[in-house]
Image 1 (tube, rainbow, N blue to C red):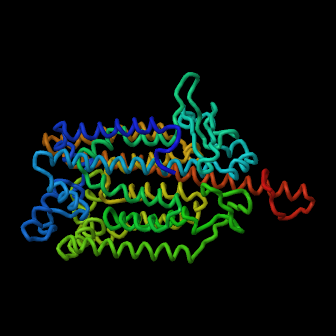
Image 2: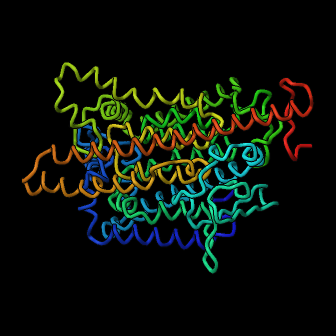
Length: 518
């Protein structure tokens, strides 16, 4: 499905135009240098100024990474080289348009992911199982977050059968997607358009784009991988994941597991669940208690991923004067954490304070944290591959050594794509309001420390600690909501199975016939 297809075409175009105007306006308003120096938006490896220094070194016949001035991706060097071909008078405009185009692409891919996720969550089997859930196991209907005025309209049969769920309650039997419609006389918004607006009209995301951060260029690849996996395109998925791992962050590689689940190389169900046109599971043969693995298909996807990685690294080697300096620079930054430039993460301050002989131990301890959770989360929550992919991205955004404020906002947009899960989240508003306090204080503390000279690093670091703790609570809330959803479905499945067995007079584990199955 095209990211703009459907009833909300004009609304989506309007949101994209407003988002593009916001980004271009910020870039050309004279605020770009101030935004580029904000540690909350740009880190050293994604700095446009440092990328220009690396490109200048290359024009002198030196390595782009000589002297450690630049440690980012070759993708940044390619962007600088592309802008350098423009006349000097329009280079700033060209750079702003280039980064704006990448950010718009990320937003449209995010919308496509939401369309896919809503279509899967609207499938028949979960709606039928909800009829057998206890009232306390169903998503709450009085949660102020889940009772927003939104209407979801998605095509569940590839253009032939469009379902629109509306209602006053956020989650009910008649509304499997978990959102409600606008009031009388109001305008009904599709959830994908809400996600699109939450990303494009976010001033922090727009500020990072105007700052010409390399994250804007790299973020498109993991989102493209998830969108391609939802469309059943394994080759494109492997290529996008390889580009994300080689050109953005190493941490994108574990997305291979949820992407494989989305592609159908894994299937939920003890006898293998059938798949409808949108990729959602039908009721026939579904068993939420088991996870069946198609090993051969997963190995083929892994082989394609490895081949794409080799090809991309080869192109980067040729583009950087036949040197592997880019790979060593990425390893130094993402694996060895040698760049201790302050940011909103927790690594830089800790490694400055810890004794040098202990840094190796804590480096392994910290950097292994996000990888530890991927496999258990896959085994536990593999029946929700789209939501699992969002959770994995949020976990890696939380534990990476060089985060920005956009990472948790991207995670929030991804969480919003799963209404059945987000409706079960608790303390969303209190955690969000509490996280707003350190997020707003970060620029103030940075100014007191680095500009005014009336503060110190502790002023800034304490705000980052508070912010990261609250973000961890937010991610844990989503993970807990997924576990609750899985438990509710499992209990409903067992209740349904026992009821059918008792009705048949067998008293045992007879096969379950769901309503509507032929």
